[in-house]
Length: 289
Image 1 (cartoon, rainbow, N blue to C red):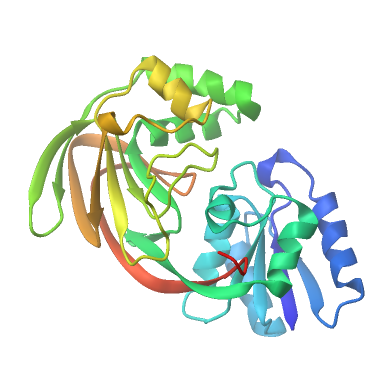
Image 2: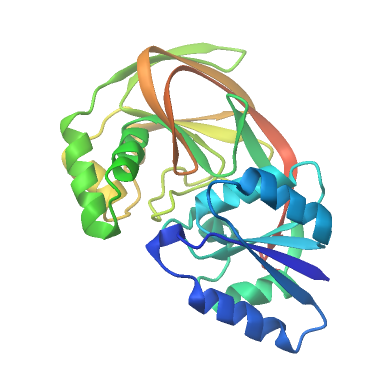
């Protein structure tokens, strides 16, 4: 088989030398072939599809964090090509969800010895979400984090404190078709999985293979609870959240709200339209997953 590795050189703020060396060593005595493609963040939407057409790989692998996985997945929709993941980013939430080992050799072994599994996506305002999308406090934190180019746990804590001082309650109407629910919340998450890339669990029963997603409503957020969730990565108190299963939902806000998908800030919105796309993407996962 031909494996095409899409490498994000700046994902996680670290060089990918160890990953590149690991890929080369892993395939040195293998019947399979590895091709490396470096993303530049500027021309990828043109050059990466061109590379796919020229090489015609059997499997494609995203080397980076959740943002890199999302970009590569978008290019593979409708092709039937399986997507593998090497968790080389600062946020590797999807890799954690799939049970992919964090080390180089362990994750490479999954690519050649793992199994193929059809995975759900969420279509949110005509964009795809593999993992988690949200409006409110976390999206505001993502915006602050990206605008100020913060790094590391200390940078994240600074971002949490800054955003916490500016937090505002959202008033929303949540329509799942059969009901319309008014709510007041600091944050609302559309969850195709269980946890954020940091490891903070916000949707304990989430499953990207079950044909549905969850609407997670954070009704209360104290300073300590935010630190526990976003900095210490502890599970949130289930008594202070509400979880609604859905296959389709429309969320309308009474004022513009910060919005993010899979760790990428998408601007401010007053309406979200989300639908599940069952089995839309084929992933390479560990055999025991």
